Image (cartoon, rainbow, N blue to C red; front, side, top):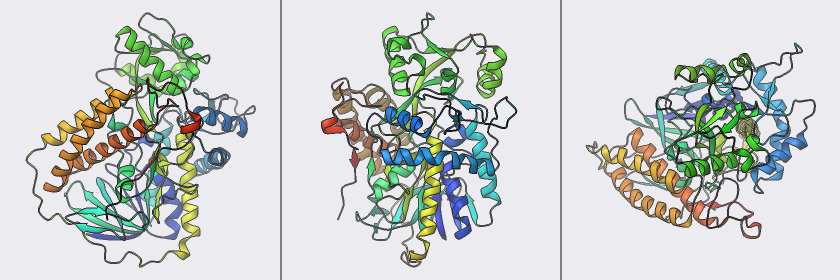
Length: 541
């Protein structure tokens, strides 16, 4: 089946939904999402949105904190633009109906939290489950809009570009091209549909599922980045994978994050003997940035042989803990952990992709009419390490700017530039009777990425990872073209692509900076590496 829309949005988090709501007054919007519309990284975000509202805060302080965390690779003009746009985007979200937590003064002022890397309290939040509050409101508004259709349980397969050639489903594209839409698999019927669009927006989130341990939901398989790369778009800085220091360690817990705000409210990281260790690694102790805290925990676990460390907030008033962290408190309590009386077992986990599809200040990729927003994009805000709670901020700001650019340019869009798109061609494929190939390769990728391309890297580990991914990629390519596609196969193909790109970026960067830490290259090299690591798929003529 073929659908023709004005705007195709792939992903239903804060970035995709905000964009969709803003452009829906100007045309028909299709939102494609792999599972239910609520199943996004936004929905699981606990902390909040960093923005300047405090009496003693300023744009300059927020800018400096962001630049410091980014370790030399942030784009100054982008940081300034995003930070100064923050309060307006927060007010817009409030006008849409999102109830951020107010302080206890009764003056209707926002309650502001503190997180690692921030010099002032500036985290706007809705309890300790901010993302869910945002996601619910935006999904409800999108469902109610007459010009927005949400296609749930649908997995995007590949982008369609106007100069592409099709041969048994294989897509090749010129480096300078126009995006005309995407092929999308209906996960329930296994049919591949053609979505033709004037504007296509990638808002698929990150790629945490490339790693064995992650705070991300199962949908985070790097789909948008992989599709853009295959279509010929530039991607950048994929070696900078942020590992959140504190993911709940429990056999019955999956991907549950213990928010940065727990440390911001005086939570202390301790080892199994009760020793507070962060002072050994950073003068800020437990308020150190995430990359420092994650490496510190990794180092402590390697020295002790323990499975986890602990986050202790038992010294705070129990009523305060229960009121400030109701979601975390109830989750821990359901697992037999009373965080008001005992420390929480935690381990680092893959959390956020600082790199992505390279875009300009309006979210435009180097492929015409293809935009990327949110975690899928590399905007220049985060540099080598994202400052806590700048992610939802970036998503809201870039969705707004992308929508503004699209509306401004709408009169120049040629409606019929993408006529007669070729349908998906499954010729020569058959149903698979070897699903074990998918599950085995999925598991192997995630394990060697964790062991070889994780928090601490080395030349030898990276070489081993590259050798393994090359072999696996050959197996996937053969399997992909022989059998009918499934959502599991699409995701495997994408995490393999992201693994390959992360390894490439890590091998190229011969230094340690931000989230990339190589024991053979411990020092930063500003002379050679004060720049983005940019990758593009070799053109197939």
